[in-house]
Amino acid sequence: MIETTRLILKPLTYDQLIKYIKCDNSLEAELNLNETSRTVSPELKEALEQTILPNVADETKNYLFSTLWTAIFKAENKMVGDLCIVGEPNEAGEIEIGYGTYDEFQGKGFMTEMVGGIIEWAKTQPFVKSIVASTNKTNTASFKVLQKNKFIKVGETDTLLIWKLITVV
Image (cartoon, rainbow, N blue to C red; front, top):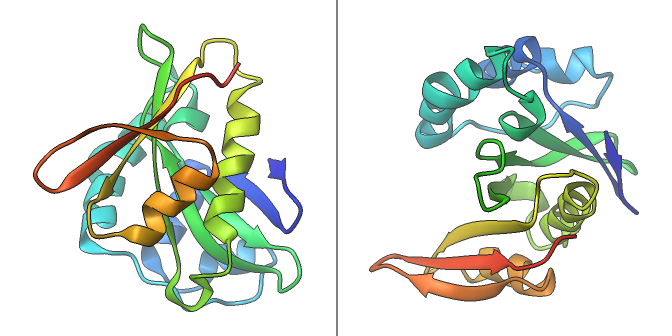
């Protein structure tokens, strides 16, 4: 668990991820949180079923580098967004993150704070040297989150901007 000024960042267990997918507030009930209106996009559902859940179930891997971390807004005791680290550090010590804020909580700086919390956590992980992320070129809010956390643009594709935080140590 990671705590920031306004948030608690909680890595979800396998069973909690199953409840997360259901979107029936069973996860919120287990975590003693107030209900929130969230949906799971088809892309996230596929990632959960195809990649995240199998990786979290793999006992040879550190699940903290594969699971969803949910952001809980302390003042309202509600989940406001999620972040996923896409696997353990590679040979270069690089990890990749993806994130999203629930609609009703967008524009309030929660994701900037959550990414900052994950950066601080990553600094304590012995094999992590840098963090990368990709944003859609049209998603200004998403790349502002990275810019505020000192990521720099290192590349692009037709649709994506590639960002990197060079030194987390």
